[in-house]
Length: 170
Image (cartoon, rainbow, N blue to C red; front, side, top):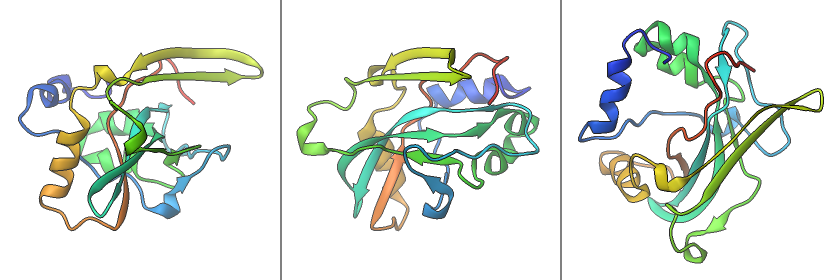
């Protein structure tokens, strides 16, 4: 766990409202094949691949994949450090493609996998499905748009699905 107060992180799964936080502006986001950011003051940095829900004027129009880069040691020092652990240069990557919402029967029935290689050798590999998400896409979008004037176009990441072991860092 990234925090000395793990119950706080576990409680969010049983809470009435989902955890939502600001991740990145377009200038902090990179595309496929571009290097993600790793904070120089972090000792434990991990990728967090997630389903991305693309909204246009608050309505779901498509899906993509996103990487919510996180500095877990910074977040673990104090939950109030979440913005520092999550929001920095190149902290989010998106793509490489978008699937239209109309072409997808169920966003909760998708496979997701991550492979990390170093020097041509696989150092981490795992897979999951969006069926394991703690919250539905619809609930997350509802909470996000409920009390916010949302930008015309937004990508809402749905939560961490795959995380390397605690001894792994980028």
